Structures are given as structure tokens and as C-alpha cells.
Image (cartoon, rainbow, N blue to C red; front, side, top):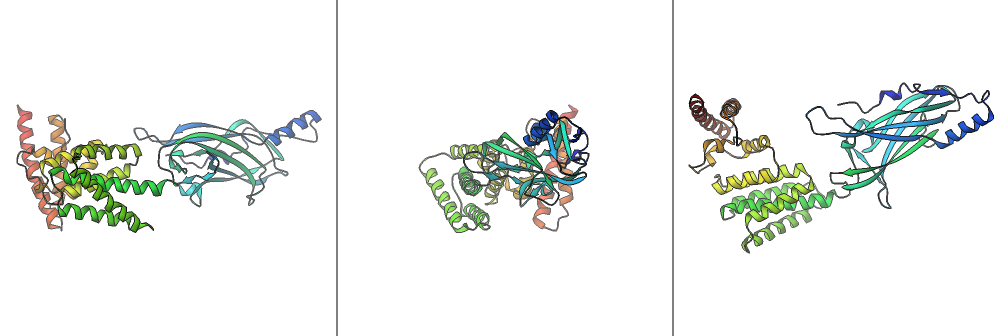
Length: 392
């Protein structure tokens, strides 16, 4: 990924011109004074800073042009760029996840340079900095108006800019804003809890072990919050309400579809993962994965758009191979093989799984070692079947 400290700041002389107030005409002098008084003109362009094949990392390149009166030659100055949310009547700071371009957790870009002449004119737009929009968080999710301010300040002076410019942009924030997070996290935890209860009921009943797993999650989830007691009470109420819905005839599939849709619409990938992990733990609570539970887990993974590799990783940690008690469940399903692979790809996948689990046969944890041995035997049997089919 590219650096967001723009090297063009250091070569500030490029595209700059000298104004000699003593030899220029009065009309020209007045024009320059007007240009200086106008300040900096800011423009921008969007860029994607991701590597090829990766998810987009959108950013904004900020350019400046205009005239700066330094007052002396070779004057040390600082570029400073700040951003704020100005949607509506209130103004809010913009948080930044990159320490090198933040101050007090807020976006704050600064770079040192010098103004070699008394007056410097940037006639062509000069790149000031690249702003990583993907690392910024405003107060609220959705369509917002952000204001970018760029200053040229005397070195060590944060209050009296030699010149400055302002640019307003429309920004679509896809993540939850920091003023919304408290309410968002409470709602997400309630949705996770309700989804887990629905998962527990897929086999026709909710056991004490399954409820214990869900209550343990609730206790751990609220432990770091100041309003932990209030949050825990709300989660316990959510469990009760969900059970009541099930008793009144609402199907588990209906509830699962509804809650998974809310997770997807929130755009909170971490909560989707947390929700699926808890569902896997609930399914394994009774040490048996009944067919309906296995089907429900696959359905939830699809509804939450959980990557198959991550699903297998969660299953590896929480579900032992002996828990699949249904003799009619195909071995490849018990192992978590992706659906639709060709025979050659099945062999490749099984071989990779065998290598992974063979290493775990020597685990100091007896349960892990036993599970690894059982999986390796099952994988070996599947490889024999695949080889026979390939020979045909």
C-alpha cells in the first residue's frame, strides 16, 4: 500500500514562481495581492489504494493551487490538513485508524517544508496528500458532507496560517458512526443472542447446556461496558422474548432469516462472524450435531455470507467429528468439504485437510489429538473413494 505522507511536499518548489513586488507593475501587483487574498484552491480526485485482487481501499488525493506570502525567504512552514463532518447544524471530528496521520485519534495530516521566496505561486494543482477514506470514521453512517481544510502555517504556529483553503465533499460512510456505536452494539448483541436461541431450537427443543452457552456469551459480551448490567438484562429479556415467539408458532427458519438479514444490512462483518461462532458453539453444546442442526448451520453461514474457509476454521475449533451422529450424513459433509468441487479439486482439498489434521494428532490436548486422528481416518477413506472414481 502507498504511503499517505506525500513526498511532493518536500519538493515544494516545483511549479512555483517568484513575485518581485519592487519591479512588477501596479496592475500586476494588485492582481497578485488579490490572488494571495483568495487563499488556496483545493481540488480532489478519488483513488483505489488496494493491491490487485483485494477489496477496494478508497482514498482521496488532495490538490492545492494559489499564492502564499511568506514575508521572508526560506521560511520554515508546515502543511496541515484536517477534516470534519459538517452535515446538519453540528460539526464533528473525523476519527482516523492510522496513527501516523492522526492526533487525539482524529485525522490530522502534517508535513514540514520551506517557502524559499517571499511570495510563492502554485499555478498548477499540486498534490498535498492522499487521504485514506477507508481508514476514517465519521459520527454517522450514510450520506454525509465532510469539510477538508488545508493550512500553510509558520513552523511551530498552529493559530496564524499564511494561507488556507477549504473543500467540501459528499461522502458515503458504510460503517457505523462513532456516535451510533453504543446503540448499534446493544442491538447487535441482542440480535446475536436471538439468533443463537433460534439455532438452539432447530432440533425441536432448547437444552440447558445450550442456554448455558448463550448466557455465558452474554456475560462475556457485556463485561467491558460501563452499562454492563443494563445490557445483560436486555440480553436476558431478548432470550425470553425469542423463546416466547417460538412457543407461539414462529418457525426457527423465519427468525433465522430475519436476524441474518439485519446483520447483512448493518454491514458489520465482525458481528456476523461472532454470531456464526456462537451458533456453532450452541450446536455443539450437547456433544451431538443432529441433522437439523447441521442443516441450520449451513443455512446460517449462507445467510450471513460467511466465507467457507472461515466456516471450516470455526468448525475446527468448536465441532468435533464424532458429534455428527447421523450415519446418513456423507463423510465429505462431516469434514466440511465445499459443495460442487470436481473430483480433482476434491482430492486436492482432502489432501490439504489431511496435512492440517495430521499435525494436530500430536497435540497435548487429548480431545484435539483424538479428533485429529478420527478426521485423518475419515479423510483417508474419502481419498480412497475419490481415487477409485478418478480411475473409472
